[in-house]
Length: 369
Length: 181
Image (cartoon, rainbow over all chains, first blue to last red; front, side):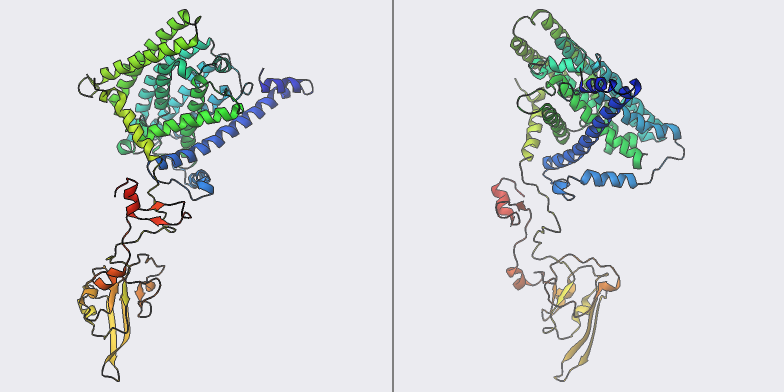
């Protein structure tokens, strides 16, 4: 029983039914929303500082101690800007797009377990809900590209749709591996079943899921839809003011959401010794996000055909093979010690990565065959 | 078996950026920290020494822009007394020809570089403003004696916390830390 349900039961003795149903929901949503927005702002600051250090710069350090208030200043600046709508754009679609990008990102947090019983809605199909909801923001990005009446925005939107559709498959397949071992689709059950983090149990699954999510949240090296050097700023080129802020928040919210999901699925969520659960969750989220920033600081952007090839020829076959291996292991090896499974999976991960990098070097490093 | 194409390249790249995390930031936080400029900088306008100046107006003749306005009258020792020595720095292009032309070393280029003003009028400097002061120090341009007395140019800085966080260390230290130029 989650904390919210307990609160609802306690209220139910005193208040009428509908109030006892609405109030806990509102309280929970406000708490989670506050947590998410605060963390998103912290993320913006953290990325700018960390990226600065990766590039031997300082990063923003003027406003407040260590520049901690810089994101607030940025927010104020963005909010004060004029809201420009293209004259020949599709006004309704242009207006609606930022919402459709931002809202699903927030909705993901409904099923993220922040502690043993601290979860907004303990759905029994939690992970399916995540996959379904997170795909909706693609529609928003496509609407932004379409409504802007701008060729660069439309190119970016088309790239996004292609990218999202391609990377959704390996992500879902690698999630299936986790689900097979955990034996449940519920996020709380998945966390509870991780006595050993699934990172160790399924290294290849983690690799595929991680790369897939980095592509899904459109960050380097898969940030083709915002490729500044090719298509200016991509789908949000015609956006300013509050609407741009929505995209900006949505982007970092996406990063935060996927960091939460990766933590929950592969890094044993809030579990950990000594520290309280919420702190463990934060530490793991920050670790995942640092890894993403590190990749952004290092890797150059992929070409469009390389991006597609990486999804369809690289991640997808590997994910399918990974799924079959995990299924076989769950069938035959689960009775024996899990550490055997860890060893076997690491060997398989190494061999498969080597094999596929061999495949990708066909034609002297060029991926088109 | 060569591992160059099996993801090792990516790992190497990640290692390089990871090392950068622990290097001292190369940023110069300008208003608080300033690098020492080149000793022969043709920086801020001119520095004018009234005691050396004879009022011969060689500088005014050598100026391609005609920026220097100089007016004199004959003094009691049969010399020129300078009444007016004005430089319109809004039109100055820092060629340094006036400094090279001066036969009595009465002019030098300045070594500072902060010359923004709020009004165009303020760009025309009078002879009082052009004299040597704390903010108007000569640079070594065409003046070897001054050049020898100036500190060396600093190219990179290192924020040294052990020394109170204020001391700037110069190129030598950077080389010791393997940074290079």
